[in-house]
Length: 199
Ligand code: FNR
Image 1 (cartoon, rainbow, N blue to C red):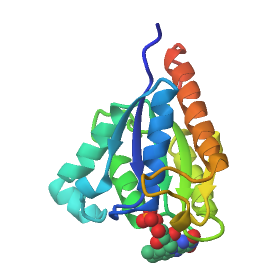
Image 2: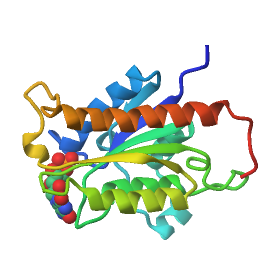
Image 3: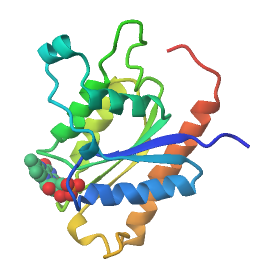
Image 4: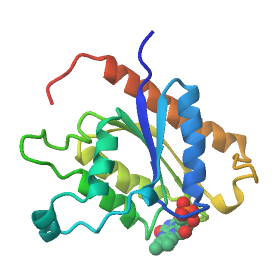
């Protein structure tokens, strides 16, 4: 039997009660049901300074920047649920990705991202569900050599979308998250099984 693809799931919000963390949990469960091994990471547990070139030159990568980078390196795909802040990425998510994109001498460029696969969802109390962050997040990840699966989902009116147990009330929304998870698992599995190709 093929080895289960290893996915790292993380949200672009650190907030307790975050709608994106709730949606992430549903996506992670769907990815497990589709055959993946999923690690849930919470950026709240990995506080790191804002990227600063002088700090990097003086002290190198912060401990939690390295911890996040190591987590990315040890997984083949990423399931990301992110809020939209002012139509784009929340600083906490962008900052973590910025640190993890930094290399060290002797390391392949973008080692945490190159050749990885991502599936994206968003949640917002607004009517668009954070659709615009998905555009920016997709473009950014693709520029750092991550293959983002075409399926994506933005959960509108997220403040009314979950029942007290954290399940999605709308079966169509549930099916949409599952579709992202299934495709992510499928593509990650296929890419991991394929012979190494030139990058
Ligand atoms: C927001 N919010 C928001 N929502 C949206 O749909 N489009 C937007 O552009 C923004 N912009 C924005 C900026 C900032 C600074 C904050 C703090 C919030 C609202 C946002 O979607 C809402 O706070 C979500 O609940 C955040 O996601 P979590 O924390 O629930 O996962």
